[in-house]
Length: 348
Image 1: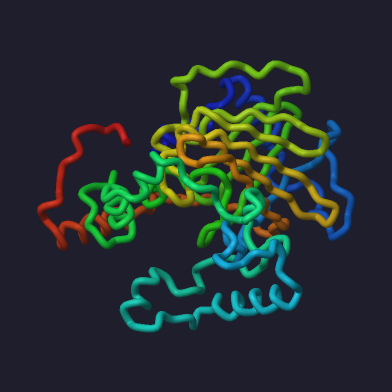
Image 2 (image 1 turned 135 degrees about the vertical axis):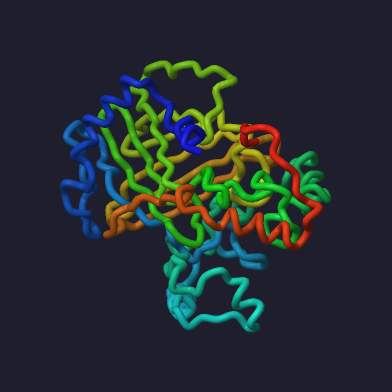
């Protein structure tokens, strides 16, 4: 577990990491207060926009625009109604319609943090294609998505079929990774960004992952990366384009999964992320997914992240992952014949 996560962080040399540790030692929290609305974006001592801080991407806005919705933005009245409904539902008293649905909800709503705000007034986070929805899958990807294999994989992850072993469960359930790009989830929707003149660190609260990307100076040649070097989070390289930090990631592990439908391998994805401080104090996050083996065209989403007042605490998922033992014990009770011993220590 630790070695897998360490691979994602090993995007720079040991010497570079040592330099990062030295520089970041005094960056446990921002040295300057978070910007207020309409405050000019702060800059680092070396002159680049200051992205450092904790940012929340919790939102009720879906990744895709809802079916039948053709407009890009909600009205103020619609936003007020959506956010009021989210606040009403985010209470400890929310219950399932039946006892079975209530138990299937895992936690009561007090423990979730799905968000209660609409992001940027948008009806969906996807801005390209203009429909606000993902482009069609390629024929090969669609064939897999419609296959019995894909249905069985999803059924095991939903608990409708008993998993034969931990490899049949979600990477998230196994405390390995939540995946990239950054998309809202049920809780722990925070990132913390650290900067030096030569590197940027994006620390994800969920699964306690950290991505380290060297900043390539303007006009400099990007270092070549061996094709067989494929960490969980791939190999990231950053550059400044004006006041926007652009992070390009390739060489993602074939074992990594897309954090959205279809839950296929992210190994052939090229991910481009853009981080921009806005005049009203938020962080504009834009990402483009380019994976010609899965999608018929690249697609782009935009998410506004307000600053978060709280700290990002360690998410000790693996150390306390008692749920995995319970999942497998329950599976054996349901179907003892599905048990198979794992013959290798290599996680697929």
